[in-house]
Figure 1 (cartoon, rainbow, N blue to C red):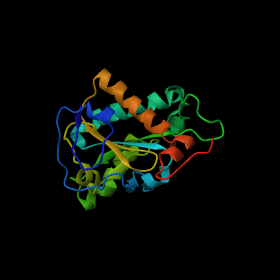
Figure 2 (spheres, rainbow, N blue to C red; figure 1 turned 45 degrees about the vertical axis):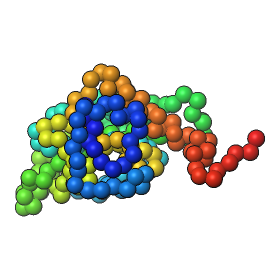
Figure 3 (cartoon, rainbow, N blue to C red; figure 1 turned 180 degrees about the vertical axis):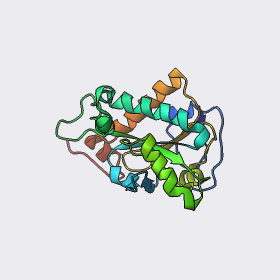
Length: 217
């Protein structure tokens, strides 16, 4: 598993996964919330800003890495939404997220939005409707974001033939950019990172972390 090098601050738990790096073309301000937007195979406009309050995991790849990205995305979705294993196909992507220990009952538990993204920069504009139709046939129920413009590659880089991953925390800030195959230890560390990001959104922890905040005892 490689950590793709970029200017945002990464959480230390992810840095131990690095076995290589790739420098992307774009610069991203550290700790800045961002919105990544594109359409899916149904022509629906999608944006990560709609999922503020949840952890977002974009799993993207070009054609040669599609199978690896599909396998990783499926595993992560089932990790955090285990009831999807028994759900009907049309309900697979909408299963409830697993809870967090000691989470306030009155506060919604942050979800983990594992989202597949197909990097389709090689598809000519005239053939994009054909690519959409093919993706609808291959994935009639689970939305797949279609990155015809290469947005993720420009912002974060891409390793051809492998699954590439971008993680946004509940505030929309980039917390990890990875590529490659997870060992079991790395996968477990990554799952732990995602839960850490969920827990960091707990109300009293978020208030305490804000500059100048104080609590009354």
